[in-house]
Image (tube, rainbow, N blue to C red; front, side):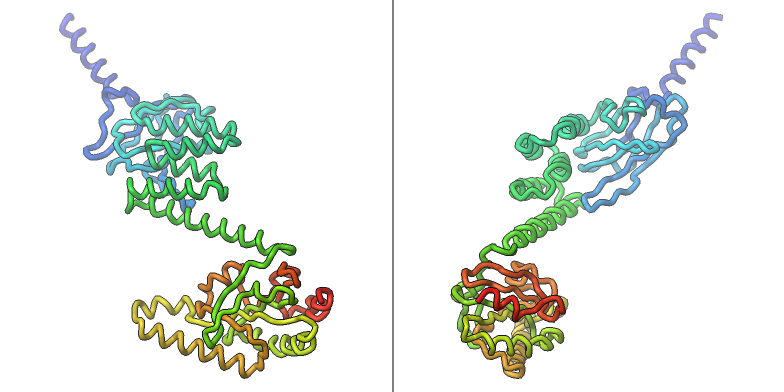
Length: 382
């Protein structure tokens, strides 16, 4: 009887040791990791562990069926890399972070509070740090300086990137911080998807901020951003040197059919008002189409030949369309022209009307638009 009792106790303890949720008995796969624990009221549901990416995508890394008592265990055979992850139970989602050293991560809590930081984590300091910051800044996102300091000083670069992504948004004042965090992520995980996506994200933000700044500088009443480019004969002309005249800033190209169609009307207007203080400053977007550049590679001879051909076509179009004014300029960079980007030119013909003080009077006008009467607008300014 005594031996039977001892055997029963041994079996009971052994069985208890196998129960999911007992951290002492849970073992991570060789070279892998395991996520386990107990979520009250989540019995018989599924838990998913997703990888979260800065390009807006997620992918399921692993999943498991939660037992009736809420306990679960998710082995991750290839381990947990540095990054941001997401736990999902039904419609409930919670963000977590790993630094890549985690082996056994225990999560406990209840389903009702799961998506409100209502869970505890052991074995993943990064997740605890992330949750502390998310809970604080979600409640009060106004203290941007504290947010910036927290993002930049986070030990795990993944947390730095995620906090910046969630709370910086398109704040121009934080662009330098974005770049600092990006450098930190690149040093930690240069070839990872996480690092590449964040770098792409920061680059796209930089472009958006540049566009916003350009749009603000192109508002009616603002001084027109200056342009200083060479003419076909190599002489540079500055837009600002035309101050005192009413100027039609005209973006066009020899290859642009609608531009060539509008040229006779521009020439006629120029002849009619040139003696009253009106002129035209033409910026050509001739050059090598950016789509052709990859084919040319580093063949400088081919590049030079293409540029020479583009310049010849530009000069020929000026003569053929009898564009009489001398202020014809181009950097021969086609759609890659910094000037076109500065003026937010995404299609041509595109014109700006500039008053005698050098300020924008009309912005981004298609001279072929029936709603635009060029002569009427010029006469208002003369």
